[in-house]
Each structure stands twice: as C-alpha cells, then as structure tokens.
Length: 161
Image (cartoon, rainbow, N blue to C red; front, top):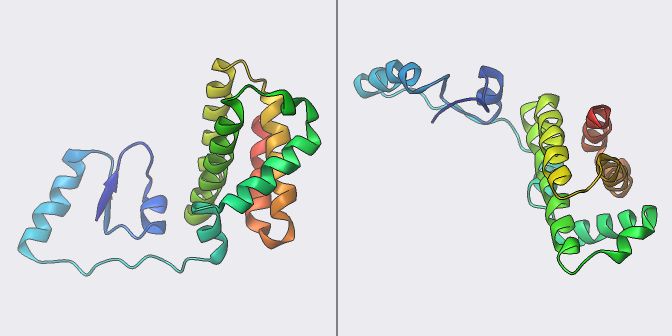
C-alpha cells in the first residue's frame, strides 16, 4: 500500500502499516515501478490496542455517556433544537475517532488539526469554542482512567481552544 498527500508523513505512513509513502503521484511512481519488477515484502502494521478499537468505532453507549456528561456540565444544551443533539452525537463520534487516529500514529498534531477544523466548523454553526472545551472535558471524564492515552490527547488538544 502506498499512502501520501497532505495527511501523511513518513511516520504516519509507517504507523498505519504502509509499504511506501510519497508526497504526490510523481513521488509514488518509482515505488510502483520497482514493485512491478520485484514484489516487495509487505509492511506489517503495529499491534492495535483495545483503546484504539473502542475509540475508532465508539459504541452508542459510550457516545450516550458522553452526551449525558456534557448535558450535566452545560445544562443549557438541554434546550437544543431538534437536529442539534444528532449533530452533537456525530461530533462526539468524530472527536473519538480523531483521538484514535492521533494515538495510532503517535502524532498529537492530528488531534490539534482536527480541533482547529472543528472550531471553524462549529463557528459556522454559531457555536462558540467554549462548547468544544466543555465537550472535550466531558469526554475525558467519561473515558477516565480506562483510556489514559486518549485523555492525555484530549487534554493537550484543549490548548488550541
């Protein structure tokens, strides 16, 4: 597998088990040409922790717990419109998945960049960045001691808020 583009670096490519990394198509061409002559030994991804699996495909129960904690911390969210709870649940899922990606690649900047993007997205919905901070805090509380790496990643990302 060859990966590349803006989202990848050599370190991220290695973390996901890529066989090669290139900045663009032209950079990938030499790898592909050499592979037609001699098949390479395939890279093997590293071990996957249960923490990554739980965050990548969060259960409805985990998202529910995060929603309840968020509503406890910010009771005014109980007055959301009909569509806002669905979007908030979706956003919590994206936060957890982005946290998983940052942990998988051992690259905090993935979570930091996601946080910046989320701030911009929610600003377009007239949601203040303080809502993101309280969301990250609520999620970290729910994850607690069972997800120490994820809690550290969320805590570090709050510096961007």
